[in-house]
Length: 80
Image 1 (spheres, one colour):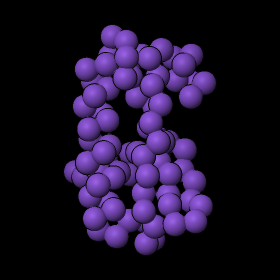
Image 2 (tube, one colour):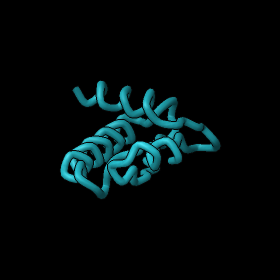
Image 3 (tube, helix red, strand yellow):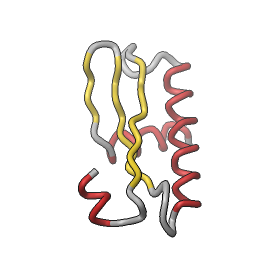
Image 4 (cartoon, one colour):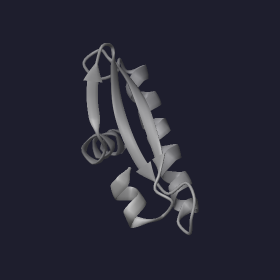
């Protein structure tokens, strides 16, 4: 399950590898009517990143989570 979440994060967010860090983006509803669900998404993402890094990262690189608030809004999500 934990690796499924990690794969979903990687496939759903912008991914860039520069130096010794792999940045994974998470666009989630921090505010707005879906904020409660968004908090669960953030917690799951942070847990997945923590476990991935504890296991050596991705190709030996540390994974860093970059988060953006979608505000539970489609246009904001697209802009992010």
